[in-house]
Image 1 (cartoon, helix red, strand yellow):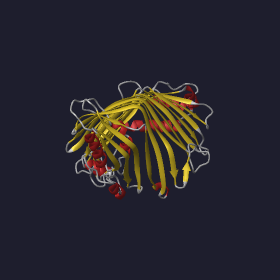
Image 2 (cartoon, rainbow, N blue to C red; image 1 turned 90 degrees about the horizontal axis):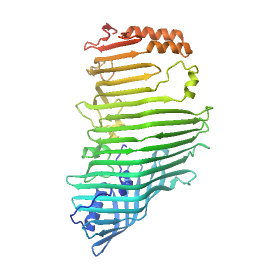
Image 3 (cartoon, one colour; image 1 turned 180 degrees about the vertical axis):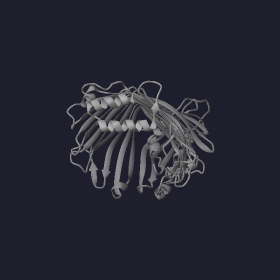
Image 4 (cartoon, one colour; image 1 turned 30 degrees about the vertical axis):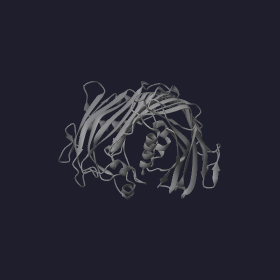
Length: 510
């Protein structure tokens, strides 16, 4: 991600042509002109032959190319011929070929600049693209009964890799999307769509290890997606992501699905083979990227994971009612502290009895579902534009200084014990402070533990924890905690004072 390349935009181009009819008249030349301006604005070089036939326009020998600065290579995409036909209601129909070949060439920097070539075919049938609106506000409607992306060629150096060496296949059914494009100081877009079902099939043979290979297959059903944002009208060739965002790039998107499954089949002669199967009853993925920061939010529901490993004589299974994480971070250098966040949610985590019996055959530990929840926010002062490759290459220490941390929620519930916590900490930035680069912490954290002593007793009885270590753990809890309001409960208030002291329930530790 160090440099911006519009490869993803190029691959997704057919998906982004979408929407409903408006009553303003558009001409084929206006639609093609906007399409060309959009692609050239994203840094593509376009070669094409334009032929008018009455009100209609045919664009033949159409190809896009784009330099890839990281590899001194290029991407090219050939669409053959496109027809832009004038409809009687003032809309324009774009007729695309059933097969769109996409060829990417470059050099593999990880292998001494070895040249490579990859060709992917994008195919579709029963598809239609209709454009309506006016030149400054066009709306595209795109539908396709079936679509697929298949890698048809991969060449690395002098080696031509066959389907026995590598395979990449994506396919989907009943795609429908609408996209509105507006032109002003920036190019704005607003997209939404759905796909009835998707499938993927990936395979690679490790050329450096005999009999080592990996395969991943999966499906998704009930897929919906949205996207909104703004793009600069002109992107300098070779511009990195930092430059693009400084120019106003702002993108927000989401993808949701109703069900999913996957299968991983890994053959590793050195570490052992394993197969992993997963299923879920849907999930969500969201992202936002702009000069104000980068954010991700991922969640899955009713997750089931089954694993069979060569080194183990039996399969095992784990389940979760919900799993997910969120991450938000600043990307731009600033004299002011900016927000960051990190969250983790593993709810109702359970393991199969086979796993439990490995360390608790007598079932002494409660096998209730476990939960881990973490909600962390704070402030950080960024010292570099870490998405700028030149700045990142010169970075020798931390890219930022933490100024504040808020522990909104900490919950760990497992094996009959539960730990909870919350608190706020700020950092004074003093040189040589307790935390390098941040200074001395100021604030407090409240912690509560229930069932801790009972858990220690059971671990000792099971032989998993030596008695002397359990005694040491109890001594530590005695130093940092006081009894709670109920049996086998402990609580603690850890305070960090402005003069550098650390207190546990009023007792000075430092």
